[in-house]
Every structure is written in structure tokens, then in C-alpha cells.
Picture: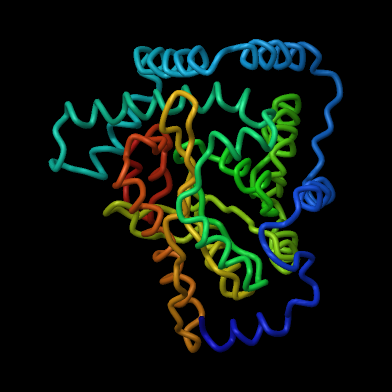
Length: 342
């Protein structure tokens, strides 16, 4: 980390950190999460709220085998309906060119949709299962990387995205003693938005609204919180930075690099995946070292945003079936470069 970041980290020092060591007692994490997560009020929307309630009751009545089969079935149905297949194949062509055959690309698209189907059913079940589920049925891989990072008492920045079980990973963190929040936009339907926030709250996963969120993100890190930010978002040009994403420019997040520079917080990469009918695993892949260019601040941000992006791309190429290839990742392009989806 560069000298400026070290100085800022010392200035913010540990007096404001609420947690002495990690993992933290569960009741303390729960109280913290409830205090600092954004609210999600809703008026009316009774039809949607009743429908969500019915879905929850149905999903939670299923056996593990039944839920696994249903999630797989939902994914296969989306595949047969060719949900955003054109987008997925364009993305796979960009990523792999002729390195993979059309049949291999089709297989990745199919398996990606099956994973998405399992995310849907798991989101109706996992957040409400309590700490025992996360202790007994969800394994850690490399927990020490996150634990060591947080115990430096500078908080942590978690790089996340449209991968694996997405923000269900927060359940393993929040219900195993790690205060955590995710930056997530409001969903247009207020009833669905409230459900998502409540599901996250049930896992001790706080929600931070991305609009004017920088103050809240930095404050959380200063308190010793781990903040998750998606780095595979397609950003509007005025908010993003063009980075190399799988060999082609993509408008990408620069705010994660900015947060790392301003706070001196450790940056950690990881994801949650389902590895069996009733078995899950949270994988912490690496801590990402800061590349220092203190005399060139804009270059420093750009280089470190690319380093963070490269870390996420590595996990995609390692297990491509876990990424959401239906996402229009290359929608915004530099001036004069055509949109690949048109």
C-alpha cells in the first residue's frame, strides 16, 4: 500500500473500530447489522407480498432433494426458453473466440442457467435457516485470509459479482461472526425490494444503497465492517472506467479501487457455490495487493481497478458455468466502438 494510504489508515486508526477481534459474537454482529442496514418500507403491494409469502412457505416446505431438483428444473426451463441466449452466446464468443467450440459454449450457457435456477430457490430458503445451517452445511475454504485481513482492524473490501450464489455468501459471513454489508440498488417493485433486504437482514448481511453511498461505505470500513462491492457491473460511462474485460473494453467499477486507496483497507476476493444437494462452500480465493503509483493518482486508480477486475475474471475462467453470462457486460463501449448486442 502506498505511503498516502498508510497515512490515511493511521489517521483513521482503530479507536473507531467497534470490533476487537474476529469472528465477533453473533449477537453483536446482529445488532450492528440491524442498526446500519438501509430500511425498505412498502405500502400496499398486497398481491405481490402475498405471492412472495406463498413462495416462501412452499420453498421452505421442500426437502433438500426436492429443492435441488426444483432449482435445477427452473434452470433447465429457462434454458429451453432460451432466456437471453443470444446475449450469453455473444458474451461467450467475446470471452473465448475459437478457443471453445459452439457445443462447449452452449454447455456453459446451459449450466449457467441451471446455477441461476438454484440461486432462485435457494434465495427463498437459505436466508431463513439460521446459524446452524451455515455452520453445519456450508464449508469454509481459506477463512484465514478474511480473518487475518479483518484482524488488522482496518475493515475489509470484498470483491463480488454475478457469480455462484451471489449475495447468499453473506449468510456464511454474517451468521459466523463477520459484520458485512453489500452495496445493492433498490429494486423497482417495493415489495420485492423489501423481501430482498429482509432476506439479507436475516443473514446479518446489511444493505447499502449505491446512490451517495461512499460516505456510508467508508464509515462502515472504519467501524471494522467488511463491505462487498460488485466489480462485474456494466457501468454508465459517466460513472465507470473502461477496463480490459476478457479481451474487450468494458465500462467498469472504479469505486472499489477508490475505497481501497482512501481507507487502506485489505481487499479480498471470494464467492459461494453449491457443491451438492445440501452442501455449500464459501471460497476465499486471495487477498489483492495494492499497486502503488502515489505521484499519478488517476493512473493508480486505473491500474488497481484493472487488478481487481483481473482477480474476478480468474474465478470466471476457472469455473465459467457459475457466472451469469446473460448479463450485458459490454453494453457500454468507448466512443466509436459498436455495442456488440446490436
